[in-house]
Structures are given as structure tokens and as C-alpha cells.
Image (cartoon, rainbow, N blue to C red; front, side, top):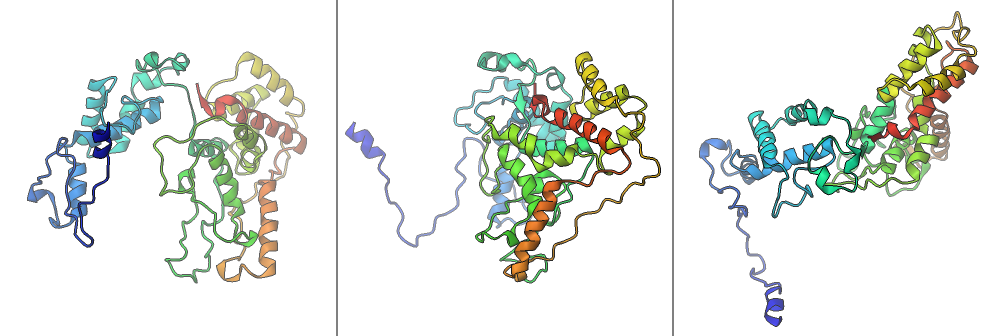
Length: 385
């Protein structure tokens, strides 16, 4: 109606320059009054807000946090969708209250709540594939819902399974430190996938690229990683795309994870194994956390048996693995013609992957690398099902 439309009109109730007094808009969740003993700086409004948000009397905050943790590990929240709490209808109110109490009692320790969930029977049950397309069954939490590893989990899993470190260049284009801090920041050397940041800049020049870092962010972005930290999302785009298997099959990270270099866990397993059967068993457990089936074992043992007894090269020594040397290219010299050449050549080196070990006979080593590459490209490497 016309009256209903008029009620939707935006009304200007403030004059230019008129201050807006602070107000707590969630009186239905928690009264805005705070005891003076709670605050170290009673006039600090940010501290006031933090105290109100984390007050044990504010049950909404604790419930939102534990619901997101539950959704992360079980594939579905107790309240769905996890970012809409206008009229929440939890499927298991008692469970939500229990997890919230655990969070508050632990001093808002997320690791404690995560431990409670991970040690629960429901999390440790087999993934319930029957919940796909069945919302009512999913609400029963008979087991974790099938889900795909997050982008960070995919990258970390590749390197945790292979036993290798990232060994990228520094996340910094001002490596000589001559720019002001408000113009260029250094984020150090990433050791876990969550530590990566966007590498794009307004200059489209190879001399300002970070080829080693880019090999990681390419995989991360393919699996839904959002490069801009100030632009978060409750639920990432999680669709399976043709780029995801293509990236794992042909990308630099999969190449590095499958290469038997001297810092590879698979190299150590190959040197220690007393038989092809033992090696196949160990690698399956290392990458897929399960033993091979009889059929899988038979295929891989047949493939790796030729040359197994002669695989170790006597007299060869383990190489020292170090982080690649800095290129010397920084913001201050990136306009020099040779700067582009240095970075292009460095990118070519990165694409070749790691130096293979000299302790294993090359032909047998390449077959072992094919074996590892095959496991990485199985759907179950990135799917929890």
C-alpha cells in the first residue's frame, strides 16, 4: 500500500556536523550496563564494546562462534545458515548450549572447543554420504557430512604428507627496506598456507612478481581462497571446478610434493623399505592415512618391483636443502632491464621443482614419483567422504 511504501522512506534525522552518541543496539541480548571493575579504561569505547561482546551474559556471541566451529568440522551448523541469527532455530539447542558453556568456561579458548568436537563420537564416525540432498538426515548428525578440504588444507596436506617445507621467497617486494612502512609491508617467510597474502600490485612487471609465492597462491585461489583478508566470507565458494584437478595434475606444488628430493619423506621411506609391499603400504598411509586395498597393492607392487633391489645408489650422499637465494630484485631496482630477466629465470627454476635425490636410481625413482603423483590426484586426497 501507499502507507507501507512511505514507511520505507529514508528519513534524515541528523543535521550536518551533529555527533552520533554511542549506543548498544542489542538490549534484548544483554543490557548495556557494565560493572566498573570489568574495564581497565572505562572511557575506552572499544574496550566497552569488547567487554559487552564477550560478556558471559551475552550468549549470542558464544553460540555464533561454536556454531561456526561445529560447521567447520561437521560440514553443517547447528544453526543454518551460520551467518543468519535474526530468528535462530538450532537443530540441537542442548548441544549448542553445551558447546557455548565450554567456550566460556575455557576463557574463550577456541582450541579447547575444537578438541571437544574432534574427540566426540560423531566427528570420529565415518562420513555420512547419505546426507547429500537430504536436509532432514543432515540435521541428525549421524556423522560428518562429506566435504572438500579448504584451500589451505589442500596446500598444507601436500607438504605435510611429503615432509617438505615451503621454502618460498619472502612475502615482500621491499626486500632492501628502503620504502616507508606505510607504502610497503613485509609478511616474512610463510610456513603455513594461512600466512600467504595477495601478491598483486598496480605494476604489471615480472620484476615485481614473487614466482615461488605465486605457485602457492595459484593453488589456493583455485580451491576458493580469498586473497584479500579485509574481504571475508562466511562460506567460501566451494564448487568443484575443472581447474582444481587440472591444477593438482599439472601444477608446481604437486610436482614438488611428488618429487623424491633429499628432504622428501617418501625418499626416506624408499631407502628404509625392505620390500616393494612395505614401501607401497607406507606411502599409502603417509598420503591417504589408510592402507591400500588388495587391488591397489597388487598394481603398485608390480609397477615398483623392477629395480627395487638395486634402487639405492651406493656412495651417494644426502644434499643439504636450503632456501633459494634471494634474487636481489627490490622496489628500488625493479626498473632495471636485468631485473625482469632475473625474475623470469627464477620462475623457470621454480617450475622445474625440487632437485631429485642422488641416493636413488633415477629410473626407479621416477616410477616412485609417478606412484606418489597418482595418490595426490585421487579424489579422496581432497575429499572427506
